[in-house]
Image 1 (spheres, one colour):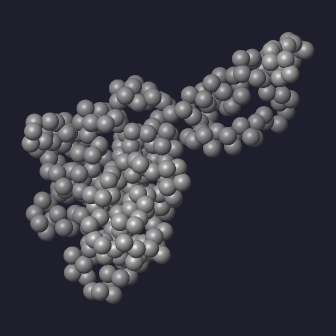
Image 2 (cartoon, helix red, strand yellow):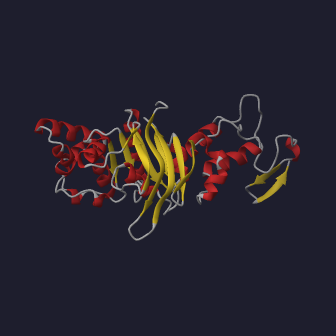
Image 3 (tube, helix red, strand yellow):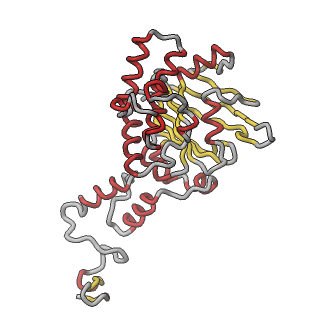
Length: 313
């Protein structure tokens, strides 16, 4: 991943026909090859921004740059844009319209006028990338919700995009399906594809992203490296977001000397791994919550499970 920008949103404003404001002077920079989380509550402008980046919506004012050049909204310009910047909708049924998985994924490449052999190659590679190769001939209406989302991603990948946009990709998925989808996104990111997803899940954003962009009332009110999220309480509160649970728990443990203050773990799994390695060599015993390490062992309270009460040594 480099510091080179692939997308720049410069003071973009969008007003819907009924008069509602989708974006109100929004500015965001997306680094090439990075994993980005657009974090905000419902109505903050996340979906509107993604549709602007893909050319489905056009700014009322402001400009969007792709590799330093303003987006071209002509028919040819939009076709070129969507082959480079692909969008996956929150509801896969809005994006799937062919009878079979193969037909749906092949739709985009066929519209590019590619030869049949190239289309088949792209479809096969894209389905393999999302773990759906065995279901190429499966009717779309026989798929689960999570499988439909992966087919939507395959349809975008078949266009060989540089940027993948996903609107609330985890919505409606159970834990197993979320894990599978995250594995797909991690694999695509490792190939250098820039990934931008919207979410209102601050724990997920902190755990997964390289860069986090906080949206509120149609504006980006903060952009930062995900590792700096614990420093952004003011911006998070303004966007109706709390600190991730792992941040709160780690702070409580660190305050009691049960964890080092840095580095801060970004997931519960990372925190559990850190706890498993605690205490460091030379520390005889860690104090229970509510006590300090300076309290003599003979006066520390311990819970007597047999009596259900505290006792002292």
